[in-house]
Image 1 (tube, rainbow, N blue to C red):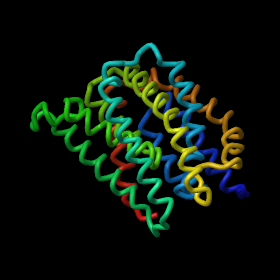
Image 2 (cartoon, one colour):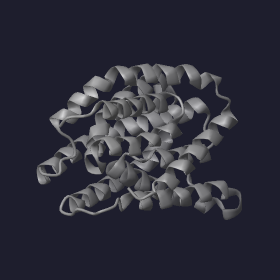
Image 3 (cartoon, rainbow, N blue to C red):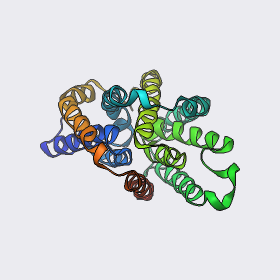
Length: 257
């Protein structure tokens, strides 16, 4: 697989966004999804992105590990696992088809917008419908697991959940860091299985892994940049920025690709 200089440039931008979002402003990470899809194609971009995400997750965990709210993670975990398997099943089915357009993006976008609406209206809708209620945790976990498996697009889902729980910045960063570190690693064997099932439509290749290694310095630089900027961002603008970026990303998922 040969990448043109322009593709490398776009890939480098995606790598910087990944590193910055993991340690600075989480909502910015979703921007890399369409960029990586443009460089590698939709299906291959999922696996091509994963090693870079795991690398950035390691940095985020090292910076914010002490601030995680484990109660939230424990309650989300069973539903996230179910979502991961649902996403894997869909990718398996799509491995036998050749759809003209991305059919997953609009589904995820609609779910994210629905969650955003519930979050913004939680004062009027009652406790059972808020994202951090019992029912909300189930929906959040399922959608987050499904969306991270099929397109690495769980960022907006988790951003809405974390901000609705009214966490402080460091708590949000720490909880998000551990969430993505654990579940991105969980995706590795599932991607290997999909590669075995559909060798003609791989989720990753040797070339994508070499690309990941080349992007490693950029991810590290971006990670330290995000960490340096986070203390200077006030809490309220931080929450607003995360939600706005989640909304923009969700709307973008409706654009035909």
